[in-house]
Every structure is written in structure tokens, then in C-alpha cells.
Length: 432
Image 1 (tube, rainbow, N blue to C red):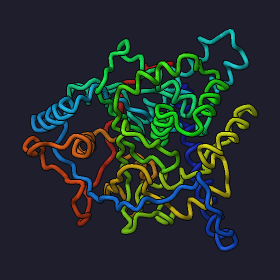
Image 2: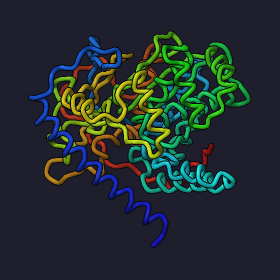
Image 3: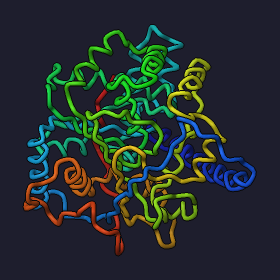
């Protein structure tokens, strides 16, 4: 049995277990809501924004590779360049990184004299995950390269562990700050813009980055947590000072509303959510196997949904970070937030997109990643870049757009169905 097949079986089994756990958890939520008293107000409680989200319907614009597609992507790239956007950074979500189960990290701790072994394991894990998933809830390397070539804007992917808890995300945010500050030998200058595109919990890294850049409340605790995880924070302030010269446009796709974005003019925010319900909430898991209500992973990734860290040290770190970042691993908090089903982030602007990826009779949860895969499909690249450009870099007269979907458009009619895209044959090589 090959390593790839073993990994595929493990991932499939893990997905089934997670789905069963989520279903059981929601059942408990419904049963316990009647007995739970309303929680007291707290600064870490997620609240819904009063800004009404825009609703749009997915539209497959023109096929990739056609002259119309290339012209549209080039026009979007020109708008980005005019806005001084110099770099696009793609960040994947949890469980599709290079060490989602912290195996390499455990190996480093057990055999610190063999760092190359852990590094090789990380590279192998990320390569096999990307090869298996392709563009299913994942930004493969060929996706990133295709966007860079089509727009003329440099694009890179940032690979992180994918561990699903506070401390790991904090550490990886410090790594992200270093990568951005040193990119191209520190080539990002004053007034340059960086477009950050994050899928799922990859978007949480951007919220943490905004807190570090703004030296928001809890800055020292965040830096201390990264240091406790072995990250070199001695030059972090120098890196952050470089980043304070730039501006960041943040587009999150399927990122649950958890971490707070610091109030700073350096960050502009757009959140895209797969959602079909008439109200801007997803308080029910009905239709999960058929993806009837949109993105169920976004719904279930609510506060309290983190996995317990393997080491006692990390669990202690996460408990301390709860006071800054909100509930991490907390069943009671998770049940409460799942029952509320918040879709809209209190920070920035939200687009609720009907991707039309629901099934009629045969369950399609695997093909759609429980509604969480629509954002990374190769066939939807132009649609998503159009949404991002229309929000951050509006056109002067719109003549360069191809059947331009306006974010202000009323949500009417049926969405064009987003079918599974091509699988990636190349594996990312981005390492630590």
C-alpha cells in the first residue's frame, strides 16, 4: 500500500469522524439549548454586525484559457496595479497544511538533533494533501501560478501547519509577518498594497496579523505564545515596522467569525460566505449531506470548535489565549455558537454567495467539502477575482469587465452550479 493511499484513507476516516462528531454535537446543542441560561455579556463574545450583507449569485463567467478570460484577468490585474497592489498571498485553512496533526512538531521535540527529518515530513505531508485534494478546499500551486500569470501580479502561497488551535495560529501568524516583511529582500515599500486571500481558518491569521501590526490589546501575550512555541520573536518588531508602511486588502473565504480584526486603516476587509438561506444565519444542520444551506464547515468552525492540542504545554497556552481570542476548545461555547449560526462577521463587509452546489437526491458532501470547497475551485477564479477587484479596486467605467456581477445585485433566481474542478498534479514546495 503506497504512502499516498494510506494518507488518503486516514484523511477520509478523519473526515467521516469529524462529520459524525459535528452531527452529534449539534444534536446535543438542540437538546441543551432549553436548559442553558443566556450567557453574560463578555468582550470575547462574537456579535453580529448591523451592516446588511450583500447577496450575489455565482455565475460562471467565461471558460479559463479563452481570449475573453485572459482579457478579463489582465484587466483585473491592471486595476490592481493602478491601486499599487504588489503582491497576492494565498493562505490555506486548517487540516490541509504541512503538519495538521502536529506529528512533525512532536518529532522535533522528541528528536531535536534531526530537524531535517521533521522538515522532510512536513514537505511530504503538504505535497500529498495537495495532490489528493487538488482544488477541493485547497489552493494548489498551479492555481496560484495561473492567477499570477493571468493578472501580471506576483502571487505566492503561504504554507502553515494547519493545526486547529489558538497557539498554532499565533505562531504561524508570526511566521507570516516575517515572510511578508522579508519578501523580495524587503521590497514592499510605503504605500504598497498586499492582497491577502485566506480560506477557512487561514483567514484567522490575517486577524491576528492586524492585531500584531496595530499592537492591539493582548499583543504581549500573543508574542509570548509564539515564543513559547519556539518562534524567534527577537526581530518581530522590526518586521512589523516594515509592514506598517504597507496596506493590506483582506479577502476571506469561508472564514468563521472568530478572531477580532484590529481597528486600523491599514486593513480593508471582505468576507465571502457560501449561503443560501433567506436570513443571514445558519442555525440548522438540515441538509448537511446534500449541501442544502451552503457552507457547513463555516457554521461548525464557530468559537469553541478547536481541537485539543497534543502537548500539555500547548493546552496551557491555549487556555491563556482564550482570554484574548475567545473560546478555543470549549464544548459549551461551541454548542451555543452553533445554535446561533452566525454568518456575518462584525468586521468589514460580507458577501453571501449562492453557489448552487446543493444536490437534489444523491448526497454530495464529499464533492463539495460540505459546502466549503466552492471558494477554491479553479473554474471560479475569475468570478472571485472580479468580486475582490470590484470591492477593493473599483473600475472607472467597467468596460473591461466580462458580464460583471455586481455585489449590490439582488439575490434572485437560481445559481449556476459549481461542479468539481480539475485536480492539481503539482505539489507546492513552499516550506518553513
